[in-house]
Image (cartoon, rainbow, N blue to C red; front, side, top):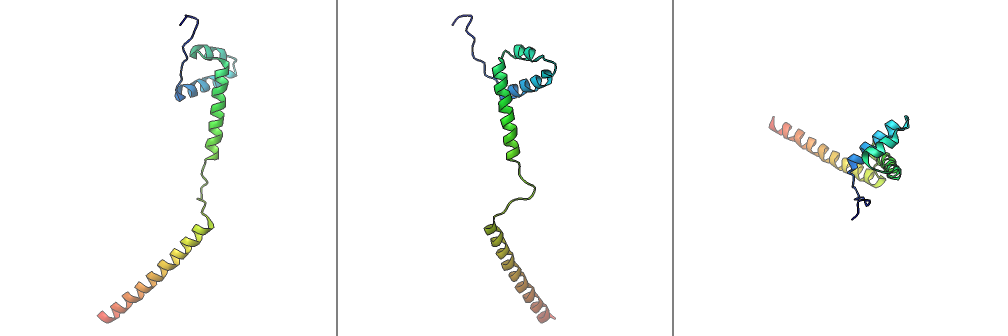
Length: 105
């Protein structure tokens, strides 16, 4: 390996995100080149990082759950039937308790 050949450097996701944040902050001042030099990356690497962050943000918003859970109609009907069944059991037990109270007096 010659001195001109660079060893490929692997950045952690945290490092890539830090580079992204620094680049966004300095982009307004036109000092992105300094960020690139400091981290030893090319502008194409930064563009790839920016694209990945954007895609990740879009995915995060797509996966966002609504406040109310979505329930299928079949599940809703099954739960309704279960509630009716349990209410019938409760009424039956309440009637039995009332009978036991009358007998014990």
